[in-house]
Image (cartoon, rainbow, N blue to C red; front, side):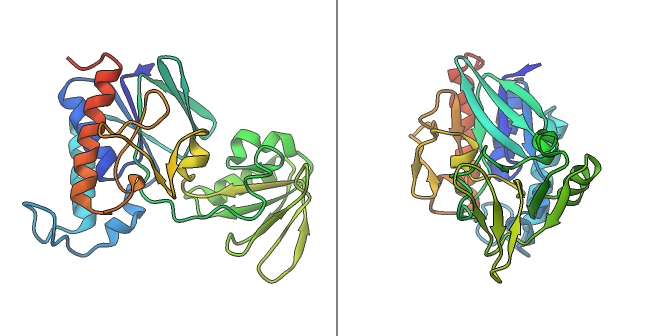
Length: 269
């Protein structure tokens, strides 16, 4: 099925975009890990959000999600691994699946994880973000798993089940070693672990690695007044677009991104 709109992220920006699109009877798929794990959901009260004084962050996100679902938005649990524009469509890979839309909105929030030493240079040459996608290439080999993805234990166990020798490491202080291929990792204590593959199973992937060629402004996604990025059919909204990191801004940008992404795809009536 090809959707009118794919949304990566289930926070206020992404959910507002979903609500806006469904109000126009457009097909929407929201790709998200557990949205209640975000820092916003730990806020005991939102004092500066208009009209809902005292609402907790969790209550607000749950209300937005319930509204989007009630209006008919579909939800797909999992990590988006790549976003690729292809002519008049945008493909998003999610774990070991792929979905297609006329346009996509990136609303993953702020990426707080800097790339590890060696990660970018060795991506695709021993570094992977998905065990179930790439694990078969490492059958019978030594691999290291590190990360905080909700399904981390499940993916590590999958690698063991296909015959990989799995070592679990903490992300903090980890360096990935190798010239043309991964040869090992060094942890914060200086210990060397030889391996042929490294699976970085983070809860989310930084936008610049999620969508190759995406233009950034520092660590934020660069957008125009319509929330369009430099990639055709790809828009962005919320904290991922930069300061101020405010809930009201995220909600407003989600509406703008949905409006112009649907207009771009010819789906806006």
